[in-house]
Amino acid sequence: MSLYPLKFVPRLVEKMWGGRKLEGVLGKRLPPDKCIGESWELYDFPPGVVEKGTQWLSSEIANGPLAGRALHWAVGEFGRELYGDVPLVGPSGQFPILIKFLDAREDLSVQVHPDAEYANAHPGAHLKTEAWYVMQADPGSRLLKGLKPGVTREEFESAIERGGVEQLINAVPAKEGRCHFLPSGAVHALGAGMLVAEVQTPSDTTFRVYDFDRVDPSTGEKRKVHVEEALACIDFSGEPEPPQKRSHVAGLFTTVTRLVTSPYFKLEKVRMTEGIEEPVPYDEPVVWVVLEGTAEVRVDGIKEPTRFTRGDTVLLPAEMKSPVIKTTSDCAWLEVTFPTKASVE
Image 1 (cartoon, rainbow, N blue to C red):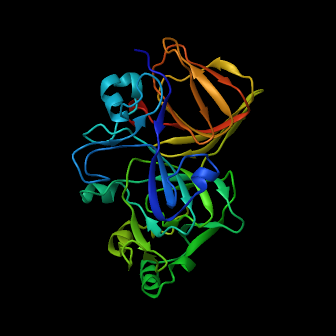
Image 2 (image 1 turned 180 degrees about the vertical axis):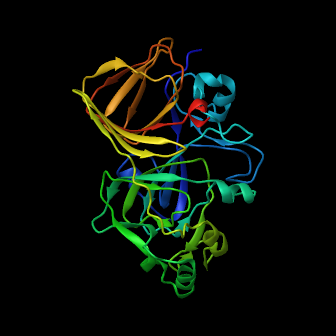
Image 3 (image 1 turned 120 degrees about the vertical axis):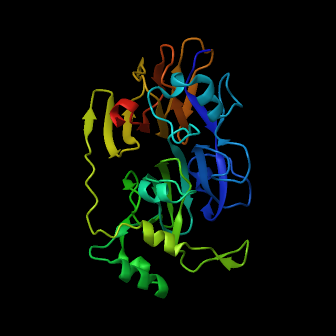
């Protein structure tokens, strides 16, 4: 059969710091009386990485003839038709991206994620590099990102003991439409009052270094922190983050703005005006995280088009038969692309 743009059933995750913006802002149906902090939009994890068990934890396809099947099933069934020349992750062939929406009603913990060197030396840890795109922010909200100049490991470790790490991290005002790149080793925290789209390598390894002394109501105890692991992962080099080479290309009906370039994914923002109808030009997999507007993609051999709107995440396979996009209103989406085997080599 012909492949077509795939949408997925969100995996809603209850968090003590979560809220209800996923419903109020993005229109997702949430269970009543629960604080939902994360909506996993596209994910693919081998058994035991996220949850105990022997089954893959992989996105359920929500539309078209493949509805009900798992993303990982499609990876194995269609192979290069789905993922083209993009390398899969690990010996199990994991799809190379994780897409989430995060709703922070409260501050998240101050945390860090491991780089490849740490992950290779510690079984069970997985490299994690990510980017946040701010979709909505309450007045006065902020995020924490990176150590202030000159902060040493000894100074930071002392601040952990006395509860003063926040003063050693850069506080950045939250502005809607801003994108923040968070490479492995960058200490950070998502601030209260923010709704973000998160694009990251497929990892669930997080080391909390400080959690604002909160008590988990489900246990009556403070959440576990991972000070030793975090200190081993935090970048104390003092070197400034390399500036992102951002670009902006504008046409009559479409604009493309480069937001993030990393070894693991490229992130761009695409705007397309209402009434466009043109071929989809890709021959490698692409992920769209829809920020605003409505549109559809038609593919030869598939009866119904794939329609999408704000809050949807869409995977466009590498091979589709004559795909055509038609915008039914002004649209904007985050576009995620991947390095291919040729570019990695």
